[in-house]
Length: 361
Ligand code: SF4
Ligand code: SF4
Image (cartoon, rainbow, N blue to C red; front, side, top):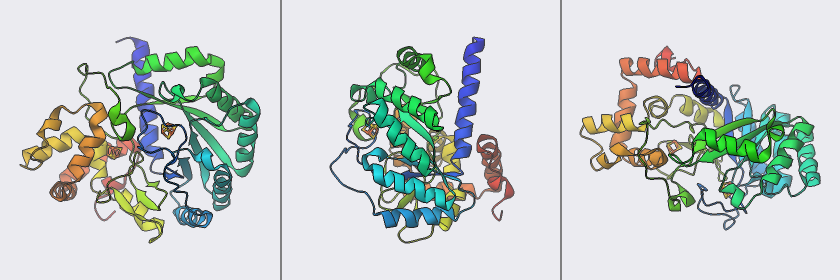
Protein backbone atom coordinates (compact mmCIF):
# COMPACT_ATOMS: atom_id res chain seq x y z
CA UNK A 1 0.00 0.00 0.00
CA UNK A 2 1.27 3.49 -0.83
CA UNK A 3 2.56 5.61 2.05
CA UNK A 4 0.00 8.32 1.22
CA UNK A 5 -2.85 5.76 1.44
CA UNK A 6 -1.61 4.54 4.83
CA UNK A 7 -1.34 8.14 6.05
CA UNK A 8 -4.89 8.86 4.84
CA UNK A 9 -6.25 5.70 6.53
CA UNK A 10 -4.51 6.68 9.77
CA UNK A 11 -5.94 10.17 9.52
CA UNK A 12 -9.47 8.82 8.86
CA UNK A 13 -9.21 6.42 11.80
CA UNK A 14 -7.96 9.19 14.08
CA UNK A 15 -10.89 11.34 12.92
CA UNK A 16 -13.34 8.51 13.61
CA UNK A 17 -11.95 7.96 17.11
CA UNK A 18 -12.10 11.68 17.85
CA UNK A 19 -15.73 11.54 16.74
CA UNK A 20 -16.45 8.60 19.11
CA UNK A 21 -14.89 10.52 21.98
CA UNK A 22 -16.75 13.73 21.08
CA UNK A 23 -20.05 11.88 21.14
CA UNK A 24 -19.56 11.23 24.86
CA UNK A 25 -19.49 14.98 25.56
CA UNK A 26 -21.76 16.33 22.82
CA UNK A 27 -25.52 16.12 22.49
CA UNK A 28 -27.36 16.39 19.18
CA UNK A 29 -30.53 18.44 18.84
CA UNK A 30 -32.75 17.78 15.85
CA UNK A 31 -34.31 21.24 15.84
CA UNK A 32 -36.83 20.24 13.17
CA UNK A 33 -37.20 17.32 10.77
CA UNK A 34 -38.45 19.78 8.13
CA UNK A 35 -36.29 20.77 5.19
CA UNK A 36 -37.18 22.55 1.94
CA UNK A 37 -34.42 20.84 -0.09
CA UNK A 38 -35.62 17.23 -0.46
CA UNK A 39 -32.44 15.35 -1.45
CA UNK A 40 -32.78 11.86 -2.89
CA UNK A 41 -30.44 10.37 -0.26
CA UNK A 42 -32.12 11.97 2.78
CA UNK A 43 -32.61 9.67 5.76
CA UNK A 44 -35.88 11.38 6.46
CA UNK A 45 -38.80 10.51 4.20
CA UNK A 46 -40.51 13.90 4.57
CA UNK A 47 -39.47 17.43 3.67
CA UNK A 48 -41.95 20.17 4.64
CA UNK A 49 -45.18 18.28 5.34
CA UNK A 50 -45.34 18.21 9.13
CA UNK A 51 -44.53 21.36 11.17
CA UNK A 52 -42.76 20.05 14.26
CA UNK A 53 -40.91 22.96 15.87
CA UNK A 54 -41.25 22.79 19.67
CA UNK A 55 -41.98 26.02 21.55
CA UNK A 56 -39.04 28.21 22.60
CA UNK A 57 -39.92 27.49 26.21
CA UNK A 58 -39.65 23.73 25.58
CA UNK A 59 -36.34 24.11 23.81
CA UNK A 60 -34.84 26.23 26.59
CA UNK A 61 -36.16 23.94 29.33
CA UNK A 62 -34.57 20.93 27.59
CA UNK A 63 -31.28 22.81 27.17
CA UNK A 64 -31.25 23.76 30.86
CA UNK A 65 -31.65 20.05 31.71
CA UNK A 66 -28.80 19.12 29.35
CA UNK A 67 -26.50 21.82 30.73
CA UNK A 68 -26.85 20.43 34.26
CA UNK A 69 -24.81 17.36 33.23
CA UNK A 70 -21.19 18.48 33.70
CA UNK A 71 -19.79 16.05 31.18
CA UNK A 72 -21.83 17.52 28.32
CA UNK A 73 -19.98 20.48 26.87
CA UNK A 74 -21.63 21.17 23.56
CA UNK A 75 -24.76 20.94 21.48
CA UNK A 76 -24.80 20.04 17.80
CA UNK A 77 -27.89 21.57 16.22
CA UNK A 78 -29.11 19.67 13.22
CA UNK A 79 -32.25 18.78 11.26
CA UNK A 80 -33.90 18.65 8.78
CA UNK A 81 -32.67 22.19 8.23
CA UNK A 82 -32.15 24.39 11.32
CA UNK A 83 -31.82 27.56 9.19
CA UNK A 84 -35.47 27.14 8.22
CA UNK A 85 -36.29 28.72 11.60
CA UNK A 86 -33.45 31.25 11.79
CA UNK A 87 -34.87 33.31 14.66
CA UNK A 88 -35.28 30.18 16.77
CA UNK A 89 -31.76 29.11 15.88
CA UNK A 90 -30.43 32.43 17.16
CA UNK A 91 -32.49 32.15 20.36
CA UNK A 92 -31.26 28.62 20.97
CA UNK A 93 -27.61 29.47 20.40
CA UNK A 94 -27.94 32.47 22.71
CA UNK A 95 -29.76 30.38 25.34
CA UNK A 96 -27.05 27.71 25.22
CA UNK A 97 -24.29 30.28 25.64
CA UNK A 98 -26.02 31.57 28.77
CA UNK A 99 -26.13 27.99 30.05
CA UNK A 100 -22.42 27.44 29.31
CA UNK A 101 -22.90 25.11 26.34
CA UNK A 102 -20.96 25.51 23.10
CA UNK A 103 -23.05 25.19 19.94
CA UNK A 104 -22.40 23.97 16.41
CA UNK A 105 -24.90 23.87 13.57
CA UNK A 106 -25.24 21.62 10.52
CA UNK A 107 -26.80 22.99 7.34
CA UNK A 108 -27.09 22.39 3.60
CA UNK A 109 -26.38 26.13 2.95
CA UNK A 110 -29.54 26.34 0.78
CA UNK A 111 -30.19 29.79 2.27
CA UNK A 112 -26.74 31.26 1.38
CA UNK A 113 -27.91 32.77 -1.88
CA UNK A 114 -25.45 35.68 -1.77
CA UNK A 115 -22.33 36.68 0.10
CA UNK A 116 -24.31 39.33 1.99
CA UNK A 117 -26.93 36.85 3.20
CA UNK A 118 -24.28 34.35 4.30
CA UNK A 119 -22.22 37.04 6.05
CA UNK A 120 -25.22 38.60 7.77
CA UNK A 121 -26.66 35.35 9.15
CA UNK A 122 -23.34 33.98 10.35
CA UNK A 123 -22.40 37.30 11.96
CA UNK A 124 -25.62 37.21 13.99
CA UNK A 125 -25.02 33.59 14.99
CA UNK A 126 -21.39 34.19 15.93
CA UNK A 127 -22.51 37.16 18.01
CA UNK A 128 -25.07 34.92 19.76
CA UNK A 129 -22.29 32.44 20.62
CA UNK A 130 -22.12 29.86 17.81
CA UNK A 131 -18.68 28.23 17.63
CA UNK A 132 -18.77 26.06 14.50
CA UNK A 133 -20.68 25.29 11.35
CA UNK A 134 -20.78 22.14 9.20
CA UNK A 135 -22.01 22.28 5.63
CA UNK A 136 -23.33 19.03 4.13
CA UNK A 137 -22.64 18.70 0.44
CA UNK A 138 -22.30 15.90 -2.10
CA UNK A 139 -23.68 15.00 -5.51
CA UNK A 140 -27.24 14.67 -4.13
CA UNK A 141 -27.25 17.98 -2.27
CA UNK A 142 -25.74 19.62 -5.34
CA UNK A 143 -28.80 18.69 -7.43
CA UNK A 144 -30.56 21.44 -5.45
CA UNK A 145 -27.93 23.51 -3.63
CA UNK A 146 -25.11 24.97 -5.75
CA UNK A 147 -21.54 24.65 -4.53
CA UNK A 148 -21.35 28.45 -4.63
CA UNK A 149 -23.61 28.49 -1.55
CA UNK A 150 -21.20 26.15 0.26
CA UNK A 151 -18.27 28.35 -0.66
CA UNK A 152 -20.06 31.47 0.65
CA UNK A 153 -20.80 29.82 4.00
CA UNK A 154 -17.21 28.56 4.44
CA UNK A 155 -15.81 31.97 3.63
CA UNK A 156 -18.30 33.83 5.90
CA UNK A 157 -17.61 31.32 8.70
CA UNK A 158 -13.89 32.08 8.57
CA UNK A 159 -14.57 35.81 8.62
CA UNK A 160 -16.80 35.43 11.69
CA UNK A 161 -14.32 33.19 13.55
CA UNK A 162 -16.48 30.04 13.33
CA UNK A 163 -14.76 26.67 12.74
CA UNK A 164 -15.89 25.51 9.31
CA UNK A 165 -16.42 21.85 8.41
CA UNK A 166 -17.76 20.01 5.39
CA UNK A 167 -19.69 16.72 5.68
CA UNK A 168 -19.56 14.64 2.50
CA UNK A 169 -21.41 11.43 1.80
CA UNK A 170 -20.65 8.81 -0.81
CA UNK A 171 -22.22 5.60 -2.09
CA UNK A 172 -20.47 2.55 -0.63
CA UNK A 173 -18.53 0.74 -3.40
CA UNK A 174 -19.05 3.73 -5.72
CA UNK A 175 -16.45 6.47 -6.04
CA UNK A 176 -13.85 6.20 -3.29
CA UNK A 177 -13.69 8.67 -0.41
CA UNK A 178 -10.43 10.03 -1.88
CA UNK A 179 -12.11 10.62 -5.25
CA UNK A 180 -15.11 12.32 -3.66
CA UNK A 181 -12.79 14.55 -1.60
CA UNK A 182 -10.66 15.27 -4.67
CA UNK A 183 -13.75 16.24 -6.73
CA UNK A 184 -14.77 18.71 -4.06
CA UNK A 185 -11.28 20.23 -3.94
CA UNK A 186 -11.19 20.52 -7.74
CA UNK A 187 -14.58 22.18 -7.95
CA UNK A 188 -14.38 24.47 -4.92
CA UNK A 189 -10.68 25.27 -5.14
CA UNK A 190 -8.13 24.59 -2.41
CA UNK A 191 -8.41 28.17 -1.11
CA UNK A 192 -12.09 27.70 -0.23
CA UNK A 193 -11.12 24.61 1.79
CA UNK A 194 -8.15 26.06 3.66
CA UNK A 195 -8.62 25.33 7.35
CA UNK A 196 -11.80 23.34 6.66
CA UNK A 197 -12.13 19.88 8.22
CA UNK A 198 -13.76 17.38 5.85
CA UNK A 199 -15.74 14.44 7.23
CA UNK A 200 -16.91 11.68 4.90
CA UNK A 201 -19.52 9.01 5.58
CA UNK A 202 -21.21 6.26 3.57
CA UNK A 203 -24.89 6.64 2.66
CA UNK A 204 -27.18 4.18 4.44
CA UNK A 205 -30.46 2.79 3.16
CA UNK A 206 -33.01 4.69 5.24
CA UNK A 207 -35.87 7.04 4.39
CA UNK A 208 -35.63 8.38 0.84
CA UNK A 209 -32.32 6.57 0.31
CA UNK A 210 -34.27 3.28 -0.02
CA UNK A 211 -34.94 4.35 -3.62
CA UNK A 212 -31.29 5.00 -4.49
CA UNK A 213 -29.40 2.53 -6.58
CA UNK A 214 -26.36 1.23 -4.72
CA UNK A 215 -23.51 -0.29 -6.76
CA UNK A 216 -23.84 -4.09 -6.75
CA UNK A 217 -20.12 -4.82 -7.00
CA UNK A 218 -18.59 -7.05 -4.34
CA UNK A 219 -17.01 -5.39 -1.34
CA UNK A 220 -13.21 -5.42 -1.53
CA UNK A 221 -13.04 -5.81 2.24
CA UNK A 222 -15.66 -7.11 4.60
CA UNK A 223 -16.53 -4.46 7.18
CA UNK A 224 -17.75 -5.38 10.67
CA UNK A 225 -20.63 -2.92 10.36
CA UNK A 226 -19.59 -0.90 13.38
CA UNK A 227 -21.81 2.15 13.91
CA UNK A 228 -20.23 5.54 14.55
CA UNK A 229 -23.52 7.44 14.89
CA UNK A 230 -24.23 6.53 18.51
CA UNK A 231 -24.62 9.56 20.71
CA UNK A 232 -27.52 11.19 22.58
CA UNK A 233 -29.82 13.07 20.20
CA UNK A 234 -32.96 15.01 21.09
CA UNK A 235 -35.87 14.79 18.64
CA UNK A 236 -38.41 17.60 18.07
CA UNK A 237 -40.91 15.88 20.43
CA UNK A 238 -38.37 15.74 23.28
CA UNK A 239 -37.50 12.07 22.85
CA UNK A 240 -33.84 11.35 23.55
CA UNK A 241 -32.33 8.59 21.45
CA UNK A 242 -28.83 7.18 21.39
CA UNK A 243 -28.80 7.18 17.59
CA UNK A 244 -28.06 10.33 15.60
CA UNK A 245 -29.52 9.15 12.30
CA UNK A 246 -33.23 8.80 11.53
CA UNK A 247 -35.87 8.49 14.30
CA UNK A 248 -35.99 5.01 15.84
CA UNK A 249 -39.03 2.75 16.12
CA UNK A 250 -40.83 3.55 19.40
CA UNK A 251 -39.91 0.17 20.93
CA UNK A 252 -36.17 0.47 20.28
CA UNK A 253 -33.94 -0.15 23.32
CA UNK A 254 -31.80 2.73 22.04
CA UNK A 255 -34.48 5.22 23.14
CA UNK A 256 -33.34 6.78 26.43
CA UNK A 257 -36.48 8.69 27.49
CA UNK A 258 -38.28 11.98 26.91
CA UNK A 259 -37.22 15.40 28.19
CA UNK A 260 -40.83 16.44 28.75
CA UNK A 261 -41.18 13.70 31.35
CA UNK A 262 -37.75 13.41 32.92
CA UNK A 263 -34.49 15.16 33.66
CA UNK A 264 -31.61 14.65 31.21
CA UNK A 265 -29.19 13.30 33.84
CA UNK A 266 -30.75 9.81 34.25
CA UNK A 267 -31.09 9.50 30.47
CA UNK A 268 -27.46 10.41 29.95
CA UNK A 269 -26.45 7.87 32.60
CA UNK A 270 -28.53 5.25 30.75
CA UNK A 271 -26.57 6.13 27.63
CA UNK A 272 -23.21 5.72 29.41
CA UNK A 273 -24.28 2.43 31.05
CA UNK A 274 -26.15 1.11 28.02
CA UNK A 275 -25.67 -2.65 27.68
CA UNK A 276 -26.11 -2.78 23.88
CA UNK A 277 -24.21 0.30 22.61
CA UNK A 278 -20.70 -1.01 23.37
CA UNK A 279 -21.42 -4.11 21.27
CA UNK A 280 -22.61 -2.03 18.31
CA UNK A 281 -19.55 0.23 18.60
CA UNK A 282 -16.91 -2.44 19.11
CA UNK A 283 -18.07 -5.86 17.84
CA UNK A 284 -20.21 -4.39 15.07
CA UNK A 285 -23.59 -5.62 13.85
CA UNK A 286 -22.21 -8.62 11.94
CA UNK A 287 -20.48 -10.13 14.95
CA UNK A 288 -23.60 -9.48 17.02
CA UNK A 289 -25.63 -11.35 14.42
CA UNK A 290 -23.19 -14.29 14.43
CA UNK A 291 -23.41 -14.53 18.22
CA UNK A 292 -27.21 -14.59 18.07
CA UNK A 293 -27.17 -17.26 15.37
CA UNK A 294 -24.73 -19.36 17.46
CA UNK A 295 -27.23 -19.16 20.32
CA UNK A 296 -30.07 -20.35 18.07
CA UNK A 297 -31.60 -16.87 18.18
CA UNK A 298 -32.08 -14.52 15.21
CA UNK A 299 -33.97 -17.17 13.25
CA UNK A 300 -34.80 -15.63 9.91
CA UNK A 301 -32.01 -13.07 10.06
CA UNK A 302 -29.29 -15.29 8.56
CA UNK A 303 -29.86 -13.58 5.19
CA UNK A 304 -28.15 -10.55 6.78
CA UNK A 305 -24.87 -12.50 7.07
CA UNK A 306 -23.82 -10.84 3.81
CA UNK A 307 -25.26 -7.44 4.74
CA UNK A 308 -23.56 -4.56 3.00
CA UNK A 309 -22.43 -1.24 4.46
CA UNK A 310 -25.62 0.57 3.43
CA UNK A 311 -27.76 -2.07 5.23
CA UNK A 312 -26.25 -1.37 8.65
CA UNK A 313 -29.37 0.36 10.04
CA UNK A 314 -31.71 -2.27 8.64
CA UNK A 315 -29.70 -4.97 10.37
CA UNK A 316 -29.44 -2.96 13.59
CA UNK A 317 -33.20 -2.47 13.68
CA UNK A 318 -33.87 -6.11 12.82
CA UNK A 319 -31.64 -7.30 15.67
CA UNK A 320 -32.98 -4.85 18.23
CA UNK A 321 -36.64 -5.39 17.36
CA UNK A 322 -36.63 -8.73 19.18
CA UNK A 323 -36.71 -8.60 23.02
CA UNK A 324 -34.91 -11.99 23.22
CA UNK A 325 -31.93 -10.54 21.31
CA UNK A 326 -31.82 -7.49 23.54
CA UNK A 327 -31.91 -9.69 26.67
CA UNK A 328 -29.10 -11.84 25.27
CA UNK A 329 -26.78 -8.84 24.90
CA UNK A 330 -27.84 -7.33 28.20
CA UNK A 331 -26.89 -10.62 29.92
CA UNK A 332 -23.67 -10.98 27.92
CA UNK A 333 -22.75 -7.44 28.93
CA UNK A 334 -22.70 -8.52 32.57
CA UNK A 335 -20.28 -11.39 31.92
CA UNK A 336 -17.05 -10.06 33.53
CA UNK A 337 -14.79 -11.44 30.76
CA UNK A 338 -16.87 -9.97 27.93
CA UNK A 339 -17.19 -6.70 29.78
CA UNK A 340 -13.45 -6.49 30.27
CA UNK A 341 -12.82 -7.12 26.57
CA UNK A 342 -15.32 -4.58 25.31
CA UNK A 343 -14.16 -2.22 28.09
CA UNK A 344 -10.62 -2.28 26.67
CA UNK A 345 -11.94 -1.74 23.14
CA UNK A 346 -14.19 1.11 24.30
CA UNK A 347 -11.27 2.72 26.14
CA UNK A 348 -9.08 2.50 23.04
CA UNK A 349 -11.86 3.69 20.73
CA UNK A 350 -13.37 6.58 22.64
CA UNK A 351 -11.19 7.06 25.67
CA UNK A 352 -13.94 6.14 28.15
CA UNK A 353 -12.74 4.01 31.06
CA UNK A 354 -16.25 3.47 32.54
CA UNK A 355 -16.52 -0.12 31.30
CA UNK A 356 -13.07 -1.00 32.66
CA UNK A 357 -14.18 -0.10 36.14
CA UNK A 358 -16.71 -2.90 36.51
CA UNK A 359 -20.47 -2.86 37.05
CA UNK A 360 -20.31 -0.79 40.22
CA UNK A 361 -18.01 1.85 38.71
S1 SF4 B 1 -30.19 15.55 3.29
FE1 SF4 B 1 -30.24 17.47 4.44
S2 SF4 B 1 -30.56 19.05 2.90
FE2 SF4 B 1 -31.10 17.13 1.94
S3 SF4 B 1 -33.32 16.92 2.27
FE3 SF4 B 1 -32.32 15.85 3.95
S4 SF4 B 1 -32.18 17.36 5.58
FE4 SF4 B 1 -32.57 18.48 3.67
S1 SF4 C 1 -26.67 1.27 13.06
FE1 SF4 C 1 -28.31 1.43 14.58
S2 SF4 C 1 -27.55 2.93 16.07
FE2 SF4 C 1 -26.32 3.14 14.20
S3 SF4 C 1 -27.29 4.74 13.02
FE3 SF4 C 1 -28.15 2.81 12.31
S4 SF4 C 1 -30.00 2.49 13.55
FE4 SF4 C 1 -28.77 4.07 14.55
